[in-house]
Length: 215
Image 1 (tube, rainbow, N blue to C red):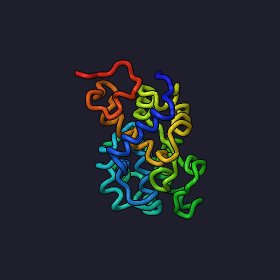
Image 2 (cartoon, helix red, strand yellow):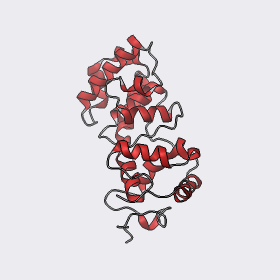
Image 3 (cartoon, rainbow, N blue to C red):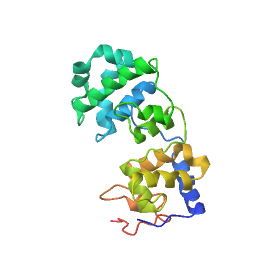
Image 4 (cartoon, rainbow, N blue to C red):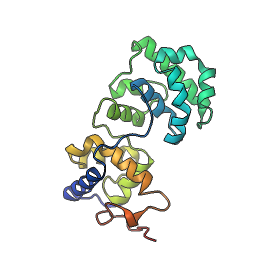
């Protein structure tokens, strides 16, 4: 685990991220808050590309909780069977749809606690939805952010909760809205798990990772 970087270094890192990609976007396709929460829930242990392929036709048929209930679990399975853990996820999606219809008037709630009360929705999923749909500075720590945070010193922590707190505590407020997208994209395309592309990294000179991979 790297040592926590100082304020000025972190500010320079995110200034560079912002200059390179001023408006980073999440890569899960969605059309409203409901399809976003479903897509994020389906993305656990799956790739965004795989989820988007599975939901492309699904969301044309079921873009509200009631339409998902009308579609039914077996039909849902037919759409998402290429995604890992699809049977468990299908059950959760159907339970979620029923709760949203019966307890939330078919609307996706916009508090973290209410979101986490839904089947298949953990803190990370809730934070993604809060950030992407309601533009709250919520930080969803996935494996990419955990890796980048610890390698670089931007947000070191022994577990995802510690890294989430480090992101919230140490990244300047004006970068908080897009912080998790910049970190995810950096981890996905540059600071890769096995062979990070340190030779072309925007923040190579500021990063504390000692095992830089420069072929």
